[in-house]
Image 1: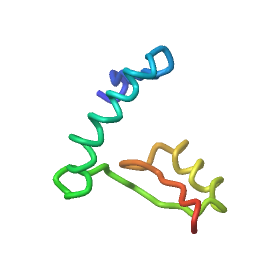
Image 2: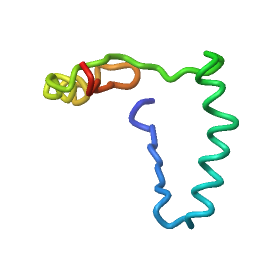
Image 3: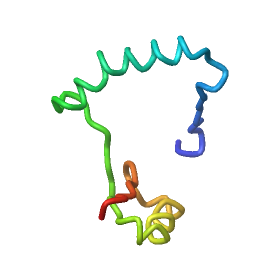
Image 4: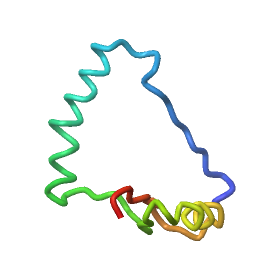
Length: 75
C-alpha cells in the first residue's frame, strides 16, 4: 500500500499578496486555535537540536519515523 502513496504539494508563490493575507487570516482564525487548544495535533516523531542535523537527516532518510522530525534551533 505504501508504494501507492501520492504526495502532492503546492506553493503560494503565484498567489497575490491579498490572497496570501486571506489565507493567513483563515489559519489564524480556524487552525491555530485548534492547535493551541489541543483539539488538533501534528504528529511529531523526534526533536533534534540543530547541532544534530545529520542524525535527523539520517532518520528521515531511513523512513523509520512516524511523524514530523523537528530541528530545534534553540537547543
